[in-house]
Structure formats: structure tokens, C-alpha cells
Length: 334
Image 1 (cartoon, rainbow, N blue to C red):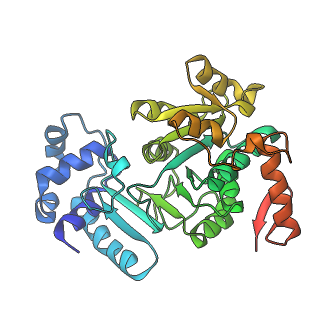
Image 2 (cartoon, helix red, strand yellow; image 1 turned 90 degrees about the vertical axis):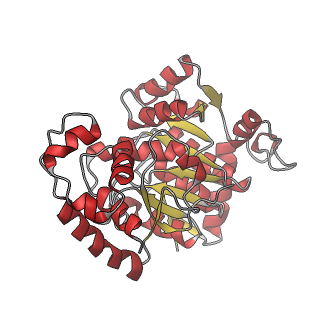
């Protein structure tokens, strides 16, 4: 591996650096040797801010980066770097892109269109069904989904896409070697088996710390053309994703099924602030100025009154065909 890549892996392991500060260190250091010689007292001047954390050991970060290379070369985990051709171009455009992106599966292609589907970990039944339906409908139109593999809305969006044979991408708030929460491990395995991708800016072994998830959310929105908040209460992490979407120039929408009650308080606030209201994938495509192919608009299907009902009916067909199983409301795959 080239020295610039080793340097990036080491810089990426400094826990208190912001993404843009990591990029700055890469530019100023140039080589692993120069990075290893930076004293803690120099950091404030380099970064232009006071550094309170004493967790600075560049030589140890370099040793960890060298050890990390064994994981990256011997297993299914790969990584790309901000300056590499395969680094997703949409993500490179944001204000604070990660300098390293770890992944399993197939990275999003440069021309791939993804819709971010996010929301609360504790949705209502209507919110859960809407997330599943949206992932299902998007997959039927050949559009991938991206979310965070969390319980609730995230997992249902992934499951909906998988149930229709679609491609879905998951972004973690922890090291790439572990799916968190463990309840989403089966979804993660199925996702990879279907040609999807799990990615993270955090190195292997990094636990899921609370302050990681806002950064995770900026990657979800950064890779999406449109972000749909299906259902979110006040102070939900999904609202942070919505803020990032607006800052990054992405389209922001809210699902009509996620507005009621306390679980929809944050969602309602987004609508009041001007977010577009959608009821399914066809509305998203309409916002892009793209017509839905004949026969694929769920609003025109006579079999069901709406997209969620149509999607759940198709899921029942798959269950009867033994392609999936449903247990306690969870979709399981053989």
C-alpha cells in the first residue's frame, strides 16, 4: 500500500479530529514519517483551535494502521480513499467527506441513484409499513435505497428493498467489521448477498459511540439524491440527516404516513418548514421530473388501494412461495 494510504489510515484513527481536520493533516504532513513526528503541542497551531484531548500518539496510530492493512488484505473488508477514482463522487462533493471509506460488498457507482430512507427506531405500525413499502417500490423501479441499518424505519427500508430484489446500501456508525445493532445482522448478510454494500468511515474495531451517528447521517444524505424522513419524533437523529440533506443540496421529503402522534412530531415540523410530502416512490420520481414506467406506478394498481398495501400483498406472495418468512413482524430470509 502506498505511503499516502498508510498515512490516511493513521490520521483516520485520531478520535478527536473532524473530517476536514483529517484532510488538512494529510495535506500538511505528506508522509507517515512527518505525521509521526508531530508533537501534541503543535496540533493547536496546525488545526487553528485549542486541542483539549491528550489522546495523541501518532506513532501508535501508524502502528495500528499497519496492522489494519492485514485485515484489509486478508478479509472481505476493503477501503477507498478520498482521492481514489472509485470513491463515490457525490460523497466527495460534500463539505466534510471522509478521508477513508471502508466497505463490504459493492461500492455505489458514480452514476448510481440512491434514495435515503430514515426515521425513528420506534415507529408506529403505519410508519414501519410505509418504510418497507417505500424500499419495495423504489426497488421495483430500479432505484436503490440507503439507510443506517438501525432498528425501526432503517431496517424496514432495507427489508422492503430486499423483498423486491433491489440493491440497498447501509452506513454504519461503528467499525466496518461489526453490524450494529445485532438484530440487523441478518439484514446485513442478506444485503451483501444481493449485491448491496455496507460502508463506514470508522476503522475495524471501533465501537458504536453516540457521537459517531451524526457523522454517519451525513454520509447517508451525502450519497442520496433525495432523503425521505418516514417518521421522526422531536429530537430524532433522523432530523439531523434532514439538516445535512439541506446543507448538501439534496432533496428532502417526508412520508405522509409518518405525521400522526408523538412519533411524527419531528416529521410534521419538517413539513411546516417546507419539506415535500410524498406517499410513495412515484411521488419521488415526479419530483425529479421522471415519469414512472407504464404499469409500475403503485397508485394506478387496482389490486390495492395504496403503495403500502400493494407491497405487503407482494410480500405475502413471497411468503407463500417460501421465499421469505415473517415472524413477530420481522421479515426473515432463507
